[in-house]
Length: 221
Image (cartoon, rainbow, N blue to C red; front, side, top):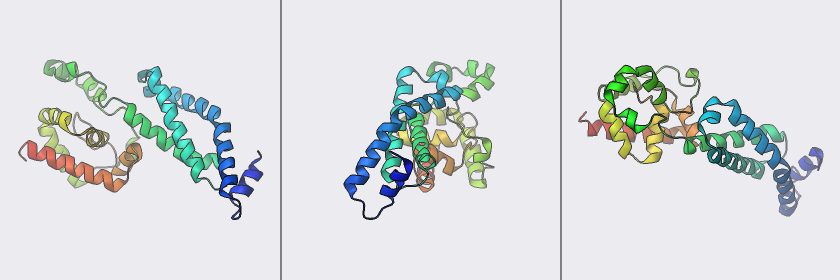
């Protein structure tokens, strides 16, 4: 099927739903192999994914990519196919990375050894960060509210890290995507966290407020 034919059908207001469904089905089936290859290529181009994801996780990430491709095709109404579907695929891949990644790369046995932490602060800081990261310019400087929260949480960092284990998984992951759990510096903007978690910036803001309020209450602040 030629792209001219695809566009003529999908853009045609009198084309039947059945005709459009057939076109979209063919688009999906003819691009699955390409998607499989490009997703694995993306995985091996990212050191964190290629080194820390096992074979099962990599295979599951391909399934996330397929879901993204399918969503993109279902909403595609003609035009630049690859540019349009790419944002759906990448959004789904980022969601998969978030859901499949361990929240902390450092084993619990090391996280509770104060002497080891004191002697290996650089390693501790590196591996307590969320494994999926954006560049620093995605976040920019912390605003005054975030700075004040960071300072308060840092003063009670040991208690906070223990309390994080009892927070629901989604809220905990949002919090850890936002803050470095070593010094509680804001690493990303709410928008960047939302992109990773496949949720709106406003929802991220509300979750973070609820989590930080809960933590501050627990430590008596």
